Length: 161
Image (cartoon, helix red, strand yellow):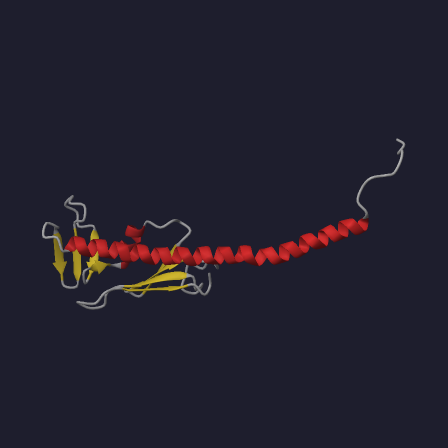
């Protein structure tokens, strides 16, 4: 095959310049995309907190209705939330306990729950896959009501998101 006229193509210098420009663009854009992931995780943790507060407000409001069937045993109240005769929701001092809070939230499988003691529940991302979220510092923490007249405590940590 014979080439006639001038050969067309890129020189080595042109290719190196293009590769350098692409590298500079990648270096400047990558942190921005990583920042979006962090912001998204932080927002999701905040939304879990908002959902937990809403669930507790709804259940607490329902317990104030005289028509609701409930069984009170000291600090524990079991309620028949559906009216089907089954007392399948448990409250501690009038607010959702850890296990029932998880059921009310209906979380995606990406989230891991970790209970510490009888009163603290952590829900978040388990980035190091050790079954715990409290050490990854990207979680929502729910602390059950501790006494009559007290309310649950809600907090979040986004340092590890």
